[in-house]
Amino acid sequence: MGAQCCPMDTPDATTATVPVSRIVSLARALADETRLALLTLLTCYQQPLCVCHLVEHVPVGQPTVSHHLRILREAGLVTVERRGTWAYYAATPLARQVLDDLGRLLTEPATASA
Amino acid sequence: MGAQCCPMDTPDATTATVPVSRIVSLARALADETRLALLTLLTCYQQPLCVCHLVEHVPVGQPTVSHHLRILREAGLVTVERRGTWAYYAATPLARQVLDDLGRLLTEPATASA
DNA sequence: CAGTTGTATCGATGTTCGTCAATGCACGGG
DNA sequence: CCCGTGCATTGACGAACATCGATACAACTG
Image (spheres, rainbow over the protein chains, first blue to last red):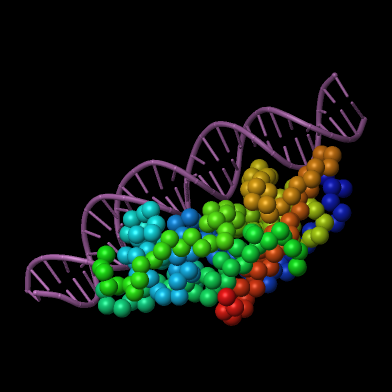
């Protein structure tokens, strides 16, 4: 740990407006191919979709889909409404905005706005 | 798999402008508390920082910091420049925009723009 | 009330991942 | 030329996770 490697000492840098753990929780919910496929399906449709339809569009079983939907729900990315036997899941505005922003950042050539 | 649970069949929904795997890769890089702490440190400073300084600000050892910096670099979130014995890491514009966007989404009360 | 269907939960399993101790490597100084 | 320093890599270990089969639960149907 040399003394002249960096110009100045780094303060605690707790200038973050949002706690780091909150961003990590959101990123962890998005950090799975199956979950992101489910979220993409839900964001493409204004109509809520039931679990049995979602199962047909991802290469995993129904218990796994329920498991992932639970994680997405706990992250605030989807909502669930039970009507009779079925459970209808829908993407939240947060999910739409996150996917919209990330998609824009990954397509645009990194125009530094901040 | 009932016939009348959902109004219509769900098409393949490949309307995504960005491949799912690309978003997953970015989310996985952000889905760790240590990595996000390093990235926050780097985004708070315009000056690149060397590894020995970063090590002092996270509760893990130097090999682990190098490991995380490698993941962040492969995700396009940081760049590295070697000067003499030291390696200086800096946040990319992508990292600044991602943290800015996510921070804004998690503080604002979900104003549906999309 | 029994049977069926849609969904959630439980246990187990294989894999991925974060972490560390030890080592290797490049560079600079005596 | 040897040694110290900063950083990267390796191997190993434990924890977390994604997945599945089996089962439980809820609701509609006959």
